[in-house]
Amino acid sequence: MVSVEKWRVWGSVVEVDVTEGAALPEAAALIAAVIDEAESVCDIHRGDAEIHAVNLSQGAPVKVSRRMSALLRSALWAARMTEGVVNPLATESPDEDLIPTVHPEPSFLDVQIDDDVVFAPWGASFDITDTAKADTVDRAAELVARQLECGAAVRIGDVIATAGHCPAGGWQIPVPGDGEVELVNGTAMATAFAPPAAEPPTATEWETVTVIADDALWAYAASIAALARGIGAIRWIEQHELRARLVDRSGRVYTTESW
Image (cartoon, rainbow, N blue to C red; front, side, top):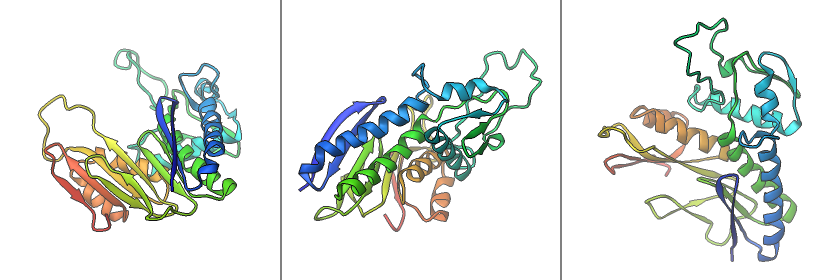
């Protein structure tokens, strides 16, 4: 029988399901610690977060903690896999049309990480909150399964990862608008939702994209990338051999053969 606990932190609902009821309190404590570690280094809304030192470096190398380095690497990996759709950099400037810039616009491709030293070009500003949450889901599920020797399903927001042995009947995970889907050991699922349409939607716009992948970071990145690709998302998902369910603005559903 699966035991469940839910709470809210880091602006998201967190849920942990474990196959051993006695392990639930310790599982929740482990997950809370993993989340707190990630939030403390990369939450841009926290004044003491380590990511501010990276954003203030402006073209100078800066030494970071091991966790900060790992989360930045994950964000850059997601950017490469999605060809920049999931972008860890924000470069908005209200005066960009009025003030000529001496430096070229920074790109995630310009960011270099050597062990625990990060070099980002002038003008680069990181916001890796969403990829950090997905990375943390993976890490938390694996930690609980390994240390407590039980099956675990961990969710932060709309990203879910599983690890350890499955409960009887498998992990039955709710899918927005489509009942439940079974996740096997070590797989993850993420759902991306389109923002409200400012204009009448077109047939190529997706309302939701749900992706199942081998890890939560890839599931999250792929769902966001597919949402942004319009009709081209179908071929892109099939090329990457992902399990996916896409719903357009008119309510029509497309699923991959493996779904």
